[in-house]
Amino acid sequence: MVRFLQQIIRIDTQVPPGHDYDKVCGILEERYNHLGYATSLHEATEKYMRLSGAKHIGLEGPRTSLVARLEGTGGGPTLHISAHTDTAAIQKQGWGVDPLGGEVTKTSKYGKSAYDKGGGYIWGRGVGDDKGETAALLLALEAIKEAGVKLKGDLIVTANCDEEIGGVAGLGYLIREGIVKADLGIQLDGSMTGIGLSAMGRTRFLIRTKGKSYHGQVPILGVNAIEKMSKLNVALDAYWRNALLRRRYPTPGIDFGEGLRAKGIECPTGMLNIGTIKGGVQGATVPDLCEEEVLRGMIPGETYEGTQAEFKAVLDGVKATDADLQYELETINFREGYVVPATDPYALECQALIQEAVGKRLPFTGTLASTDMNYQVVDGGMPCINFGVGGPYSNGHGQDENASIDEIVECAKAVVLITMRKLGTN
Image (cartoon, rainbow, N blue to C red; front, side):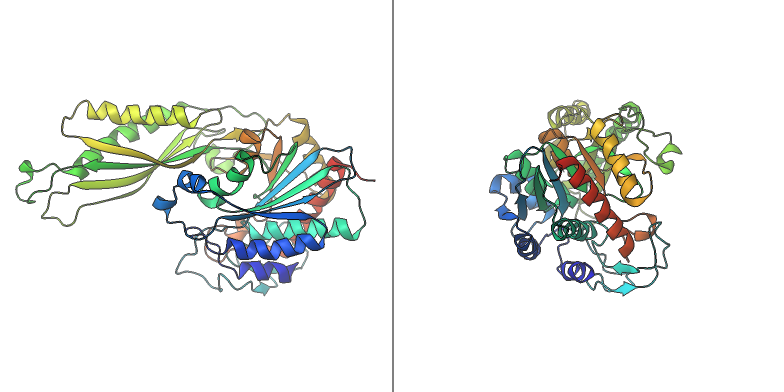
């Protein structure tokens, strides 16, 4: 398992740009074929590339995803297990190890996993998010095969791309096009500290304001696009703090973490972030163009259509007070939020099975981020849970990302037990 994980860590799939998904999927396809799975590779169409915001984000290379299917003997449901092949971007500085090296050490200077039994730690970009989960999944299914277990229900496994930038051309494509259909879901993209049941949606907007260029010492004869954007940002900030922060979706039994509780946030709550801004050429010239990206965090139940209309209404309200304000609004991409109730029978059964497998009762958790589980729950209509590898010690998305090897094995144990109990065995 460690050697396999090192092999895929050394393939650079950071997104953007998202190169070499096909290489990882090729390795996985060979492994799953050996286990008796029927496999197929799928490339997202141009439509899904546009919906991904490819031209804005800078995506390059084929958007390859793998679907592996094992037909059961009959009489059980269909289970879909997802793990994504892309990783967060690699920071240029601050790493103490090769981010594509897969180095193994006895300990981690960043802390100790609760599952550490002395098996060591493996290092590299994506080892906690999400290549460690990919290795755990393969290990789990190899164990089922080696043990000679025959499953009654059908099992579908996907290795899907682009989760870190919205997943539209990855799992979004597979589920929305009906390539993957299932009764139950597991998303391996979390941690072994909790079972994820809820996440926010998000829409990434691109705003452009247009002005009139003129000499910077005679700005009264120009129209300053940065000033116009500033007006919009004042309104967006008021919209966030006075409206969105009051928009909440209660999720009893689901914990969103101590850090958010300290800020008075205990459930999905409307959010907004002005993430980038650029414009102008120099201080002595009135800028005629300004551009920024804004991320709007959506609570479960909010749709893209409603979010886009409301966002535009805020901008139009400013425009109505300023005849010189001209703006353009584009959507880069979006995915909607979800919640699986803490009372859901499938979630409760999986909680008990994970406890049986690893000896720890994990709480139900939620996040204000967004995940590919959206496509399983919202588009696929399947009850689903989320867990995986990593925790505070593992530096997910940061420099020196690492994961406990023992923890990866424990994750695999949980996958094995849920798969056998839910699909049934002969």
